[in-house]
Image 1 (tube, rainbow, N blue to C red):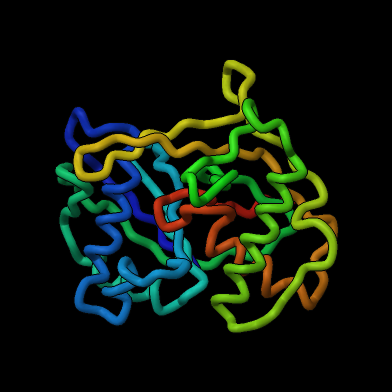
Image 2: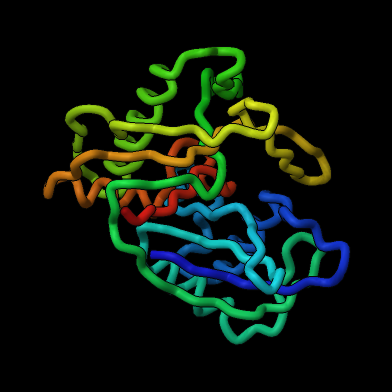
Length: 237
């Protein structure tokens, strides 16, 4: 399930608000609810959000998704009716908030970079320009997806075959795939390294796999989902 949040700000509001500030806004909207302690729980958070984009009128918009209907309903209830919200130090006018579902497709594209650890203990991110190992990347994506799904549903699901049958990267203007996102926490900036994808396609999703891919579509792909990475959009066609 998803939320679409459309905002207007004063001049000088950055095009891409800091992801840690957006995460903080979401957690703040969940205070004093059954999800109020989600931030402190040592487990998957089971939500993610997209990068910001501008609509035809130039207004800031982003999407929040989660496989937990109650999470989205609670967030929606605590945001709707407000005239303004704060993301970090920026006051933004709330233009529209809308909750909706999207149908499951066989094709996806990323709405925020996908992050994978090369070595989680060393806090080392996988980088295509340095590691040159697509096989490692896709296998780690699949493992992460299965672990998240099984943690959420308490199952022991294992996907037969690859997570996706065809993947097409979205290259930057300089021809490189790696994306460096500066995240600021408590005034201290640090980079998170990921990649964007034009197409992630599964040729056939069997009846027993639909629940898994629907979960993945809402929970996000890869690591650091609750910080706004790995957001997936279904693609028609």
